[in-house]
Image (cartoon, rainbow, N blue to C red; front, side, top):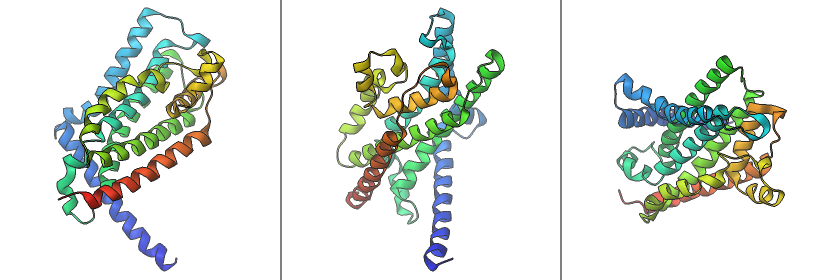
Length: 262
């Protein structure tokens, strides 16, 4: 192994330990140090997603394509819950953890990763629980589980990139903290969480596919329903968005760290 590779591995191990320690700290800070607090990490998205799915199952509204209403609404809401959670916590991430930057191994990127990975782990665990429930109770096993996993990873990548930009911006102004919660709610109708592209007229389909998150939800539903319903997504387009947002986010954090007064 070359000298550069040999020096990179120890540094990577150190940063992984740092992110792991920050994640445990965030877990204790947000949910307390008793078992019920930790369980609530998974219960919150599960209860909200389950309630939404139950309401639509009881009302019995037929869905285009003949998909099960409960599974449709749950697998739409839980990825959106992760997106909303990561974005809403972005603006407060630096202020809440600024004192940790006195440790030379801790970076702003580590702080963002720790917070966002915790959010992703909670929603991912809740989604796995529901998919098992739908499979065991209603024989609604996912047609291609790997696509669901990929969709959740891509949603995390997208949300993480935006959250880094929000966190960096919050160093300079409080406006991001004030408008992010409102924006996540107002943008819900266009995210793709609660509609499928094939439901829309042709012109609206083209407009919807400009929204990156629509591709994520279409991918997740392709993994759940397979060829039972038509899906529309463009992975290169989505990956382009994720790459651009993460590169810009890391650059913004780097600049914000220089301007941050400790």
